[in-house]
Length: 623
Ligand SMILES: *[C@@H]1O[C@H](CO)[C@@H](O)[C@H](O)[C@H]1NC(C)=O
Ligand SMILES: *[C@@H]1O[C@H](CO)[C@@H](O)[C@H](O)[C@H]1NC(C)=O
Ligand SMILES: *[C@@H]1O[C@H](CO)[C@@H](O)[C@H](O)[C@H]1NC(C)=O
Ligand SMILES: CC(=O)N[C@H]1CO[C@H](CO)[C@@H](O)[C@@H]1O
Image 1 (spheres, helix red, strand yellow):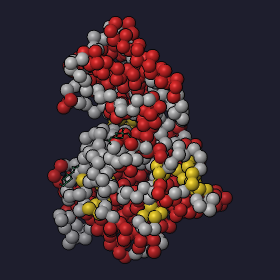
Image 2: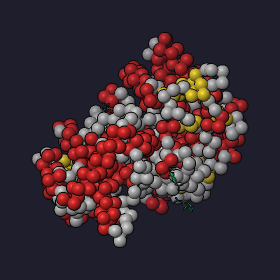
Image 3: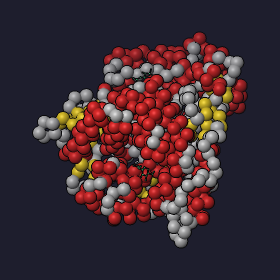
Image 4: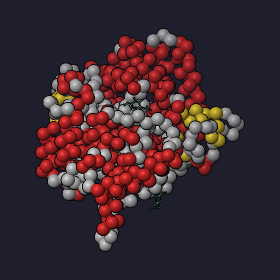
């Protein structure tokens, strides 16, 4: 059912198609009951259709109430802000459509409380049949009752920031490059925030979650902390000698794991039911490697054990049985969420509108939220029939990169156990890492392709599955090369030779870096985009291998990425979240929101690459 499609000759069907859409959907979930306008305000005709659809959808719920996995609603404020978001999207002309996320990032303005504001909103929308209102009235309402998106975080001058730290990028000799690197380093102060006192005083008025330490945000619409971004931010902060800020980021993420049992996707009330690629252990490891802070390691171990359990149990855990009957334990992404994502709920409702049953919609919504948990939202990697978006089946994929992060977590925890003198603990995690190496060899590795391939589950993943060669996804993705990031893989010379050859022939190496995939789907985690984290993992792995050819390749890719980022910075004035790597000097596009600038992980990877490779004085940064 399409929101805007209707037959102009048929007033009844017009009426139905424009009204039934939101209510049919909303009624399916008890959570949304409070979103529905109060019935006393409804016109009789509306009420008639509303009740019809209520009845039909209640039946559907009874029939198919079995999408497994618990779903617990977020806060009343998030639920209400979704109503405002829907009205905003209905009210603005299409060309001026606001970012839906900006509405659920609003805070209640003092002295109003939620019930007063809800009443005012009911009054505002009572005359409207499709929930749209005149834009000037909506803007007045928002201004009167809310503090703006982003006001719940305030600027914080990092105490460990100096504009030209001693020992900064000693191997960058070229003055033009040094100058730029100092500018990129200076961007940390523009991305540094702390949670405002207002959030601490009355958390229920905000969707922002409290964090004990200052934060570095990615930038633009990503105005709060994000989980996996923080790893590359920390790599950059260490280059910038900002050890205190780096530790603060880790302390914040550890506090989330302590509260929720896992690190949230981001620090907002609407991100509580999914995580993101688990890189907390790698963050602690990097900081320890530079600071030798044993206290940090001791504090981190119990937190990491908690996170390790989260990813290796319940719905995240899958078992693949090989031909000799041996069970390999691996993990998948799996969001505890089967509704539209609050930050994009109208987009998600429209995407799901082709599914007729409640159960199918729930399954689809979970696969969308799970793609968000993967950090790669969205990509043909998660589609059974790419680029058909409605074939998204993220929970059916056993992803190579997630298991790389968990393998790394096992190695990191073993290392930290050793630092803290726990020999039994160390042994347990060494064993776990050895089992995962076997799983990589059996389930993911493809000798002919010379890379590791994602694996498609054929069932719901709750029971062990027999490994089948045809279940490997033979499409080429940058993530197929992510394992080379891990020591034991990049130190194996024969393996590196095979992987290097495959990478060179893959079609992924582009004029400005490594493509995310070979499919141009319009999704942002596909061609022609390249992303900083994937460049960094592959480049760092190749650079640390013992093979000269691999090191040269790593340096070549890093220089292309840096030069292109420099050109984009000079032409657009900012660092972007992704590049269009198919051509030199272009930033990336595609996906469900406008390209974002700032930008945490891109800055981190530029600084980390400059640290790794330096820049000779006679080498130009212009191509
Ligand atoms: C640890 O830090 C040193 C510099 O202090 C660096 O040379 C080395 O590559 C780092 N190790 C890892 C695994 O990051
Ligand atoms: C996309 O997939 C859906 C669900 O499998 C299917 O109904 C639809 O026809 C497909 N669309 C296209 C354009 O292939
Ligand atoms: C990426 O750059 C190429 C080359 O300039 C261009 O043709 C293409 O339209 C760009 N793609 C996107 C998605 O911006
Ligand atoms: C299943 C699950 O993990 N649900 C969590 C969803 O988020 C809320 C917090 O908002 C938790 O209380 C639930 O445990």
